[in-house]
Length: 155
Figure: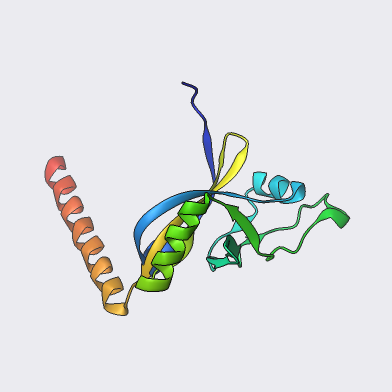
């Protein structure tokens, strides 16, 4: 069995702060050559991006890929919608979940898997302000516990 190396391009840190990630999926992405060259230089931002199903196809919207410096006339619009590649049954399953239960699809990370660019999508539910406060309090408590244990081990 051959191992395929992965190299992370970009991670959407805001996604786990603003949403509960219920499930994650891997999808391919349809790109042009200058966009791939730009991604090799880590010139991508997933912060405000989201996914939408239109006409039975999955698209990622508001993902910014900076124009490639040597691309001149071959560069595309940095914010253009890009088609994601998944099996039809997976798209139909996602379409049903999004329509019925109030989920949304958020890109969590973008990475190279071998020579191909892949997107990790999260099936997410929005967090309320009190959920975010609970998470911050939980992280602060865990940090205090870790600090106390570390100080106790030093003594």
